[in-house]
Image 1: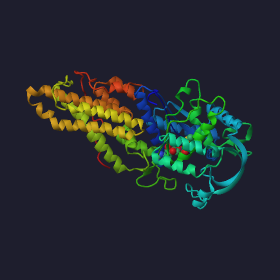
Image 2 (image 1 turned 120 degrees about the horizontal axis):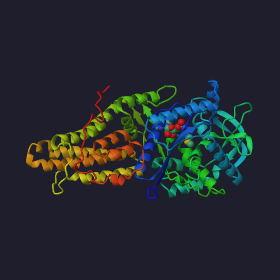
Image 3 (image 1 turned 60 degrees about the vertical axis):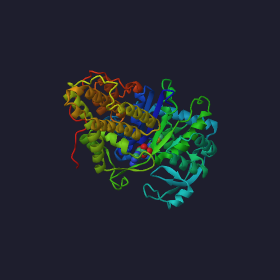
Image 4 (image 1 turned 135 degrees about the horizontal axis):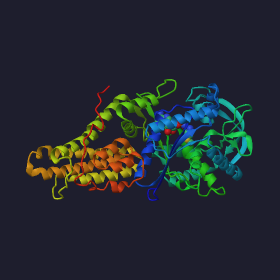
Length: 532
Ligand code: MSP
């Protein structure tokens, strides 16, 4: 992927009926951090998010408000777009499944699958969860005592004439794929789950619903049979393809990673690749390779409790805004990225934890270190970094520490661990603090004979900090742009702020900081807050 210099990252497209909350912002922020990183590396990057609009619930909610589904969807999609813009998300496109570019292409994809026989008309009867718009296999329905685990409402028996996708044909190819490409589904525990379920056997899946007489038309008509509309999940999954299925964008395909949470793993790790394997065999679609990776993270909970509609405890936009106002947007992003549910454990969004992470990592470690280095440079060196003396050993370990931090951060980003990339950068900042404690430039400065040593130490500290800022920039573009500006790299800072392409490896080259560069102290990057 990196070798090809191309990176395509997606988030789920979110149900347009919901109000944006921490879950949506989290996955989208992770995608944003990866996208910014790959842009900094100079790769051709495409970052897609959007809204999933064709659920039946949209028709009902719109009717309840005296609106058409279109009007209601447009209003809510705009809310997601506003929220993402507010939280610094640098998506390259925002796809809405009601847009004609999507509708037309999905009709083409499903038409091709009908023609090849991968989609066929048949009868279906089974347990159905109306809230989730999903059929539930018999075994699972029994396990759940015929009630939806999500809404608690009874499952209903439903029979319909339907179109089906021949998922049953793809069990072996999918298992082979998962064997051959161990990082197709990540983390590994999720891959094992998926393989276990595939081995239990795959049923064909219904992929349409009957269009009820008199209902507003909402959804993509089944090609050749307008009495059916394509089931919302099938319609939705195709967004990843439809958004780049143009002459200018086709080169971005396949996705480097689909970021999702564990709730929708089955659709992305099984149904979606099977659909693509089927589509690939259809004339004109041989370019449709499989995505490289599907990464399913876990869930945020709130102050120790699962978030749910009935508890009304979603960390919603208003709460997230309040954190961004109080601590700064970048502090919120940093918290989400470093403390979130990457991996298989849920993570708790708790105020006490936020306050602690902010104080220890951002205010006391990073902010304080930057201030110390700039302040001492001002006080002892007239504000300008000196030329380091290569023969002076003081703080000499920082060059190697910076090299290690860069390697570790780049490797962590490659394995979709932006939390580890941030940790590597913060370790470098801690190494700077330790070097200051050890070499004591503030004490050496009292001796005029040792000014050269002070200059060398502070040069090395500033250079290591400049590199740490570059590594933290995808998570905290605004604050790190400001730090870079204060450390003589305003132009790079501006590019980072704008989410522009760059040349990260060159930016991180030790020694780029020119002797004579003026450092600025300025107000604290992360002002201290008293614990609430
Ligand atoms: N519309 C479908 C997805 C179709 S993708 C082709 C859908 N939408 S959703 O609005 O329910 O979004 C689900 C996603 O939101 C999760 O997969 C995850 O990315 C995010 N989150 C929702 N709640 C979450 C948490 N509590 N914690 C973390 N992320 C979660 O499913």
